[in-house]
Amino acid sequence: MLHITLLDADGCYDAGDFNDGLILGLKGTMAQAELHFLRGRLQGGKLNKAKKGELRFPLPVGLCYGDDGRIALDPDDEVRGAVQLAFRLFQETGSAYAVVKRFAEEGLRFPKRAYGGAWAGRLIWGRLSHGRVLGLIRNPSYAGIYVFGRYQYRQRITAQGEVHKHVQPVPKTEWRVHLPDHHDGYITPEDFERNQEHLAQNRTNGEGTVLSGAAREGLALLQGLLICGGCGRALTVRYQGNGGLYPLYLCSARRREGLATTDCMSMRSELLDNAIGEAVFTALQPAELELAVTALSELEQRDHAIMRQWHMRIERAEYEVALAERRYQECDPANRLVAGTLERRWNDAMLHLEAIRTESAQFQSQKALVATSEQKAQVLALERNLPRLWRAPTTSAKDRKRMLRLLIRDITVERRSATRQALLHIRWQGSACTDITVDLPKPAADAMRYPAAFVEQVRELSQHLPDRQIVAHLNQEGLRSSTGKSFTLEMVKWIRYRYRIEVTCFKRPDELTVQQLAHRLHVSPHVVYYWIERQVVQARKLDGRGPWWIALDAAKERQLDDWVRTSGHLQRQHSNTQL
Image (cartoon, rainbow, N blue to C red):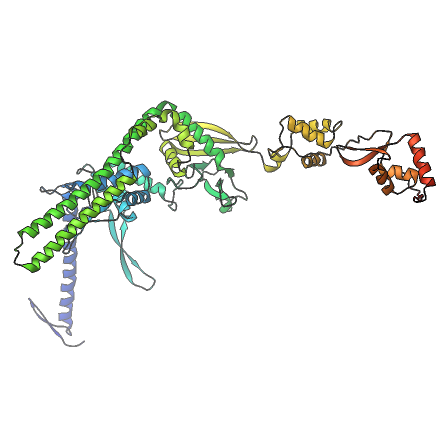
């Protein structure tokens, strides 16, 4: 080691000397220990102050520190209104994305405060994002809860050997400080817990998540509510058919895991959807009027909140115009450089105010935010029109799902193969339970199979009626085929073939076929057809179809035999075939 001399307040040291190096090492170790003790004391003081709820840290938008140092709601009405509206929309929709979509549709903005730099403390208005909504819903400060230790730094070593630090959320049970009712909030602690449950249910990839509670746009109304009674897993939705228009409720968890070779159950969605819809109508009959009044009140409160946001936005723009005008009036007119800049700012503020007023007018013209007397009457008529509202084409599948989730917690499905039925155990939000039975459709082969009584009826009719008359008789009685269509001749023939119903011969004993008459007179069958066409012989067909049956007496037979024997155009044919 090089002989380097080091100096401090106590003396000088030679780094190459053993004794001096030992002293330097001891001093470094003691200094490092002292830093550790100082850091521990500082962290302890910080924690003690947090346990008393006095530790100050940057607050989320909508909260601020008052003159007494306590946390209070933001004095800005527009800021408070935006935060309250976001929480209200989340309670209505149950989805963070739905809140973002509603803010965008209504043309509303959301605030944030800048920390640090030249813009420190300034309020900035902009578009509401999905991350902002999640941060809003997950922050317990909005519920009046003082929390410390929600996040902590973790270190990890990458594959390249680098040490990276990252922030990791801490489970609620491990929060170091949790003081409820510490300050005024926008929601109650119960609402905060309910919102966390909604977010957890909306996850589709969470561990331990049995059901997904987010209402989506699919046609299957019970998506996320059904539980398999066999394995306890959640039923999924699968679409089939041309364009995927026919949803199925399917439980294939055991088959996917290799525990079974077939699915637990699979059934068409409309069977269960219709049954649950009727059960909901039955359960809501005593309380429908109260629901109608509540719905009307919610609509009016939401509309007033949206309009209030627009009014406060206009008031803020008017204040900025007045402030720019006052600054321009207080400026020295001789200082043209400053006066010109202030004049441009004044003009920009007036243009911004005019743009906001135009947007507000367009928004009010597009949507009627105040319920008219006719709309109030329609909502109050919900007591009688709830089924019609449910089935209306203007009611989307997503709205129907949201209605169901307000009433139903989950539904356990048991399939009874012996009776072709499904037993639905409905667990309502109030923990009450209801059981209903749904008849399942027959398999395709059984559905196409005719009942034994109908087959016997066709068998009896075939004894004295031809197929065409059987078709007319069945259609006249209003009977339908297995596919729900009117009977045709081909259908009756297929029934004969499928159930081995023999064709009854309606030929009279004294009648001959074309082949029989041709053999008896030793002529070609074409000659017989010629006689039938020229009406030399009397022949008939059953219902105008099928073979010819010829009525021939002894006199007529002798006449034809003489005709053939004396004719120069006809030649007798000799055959040993016996007909």
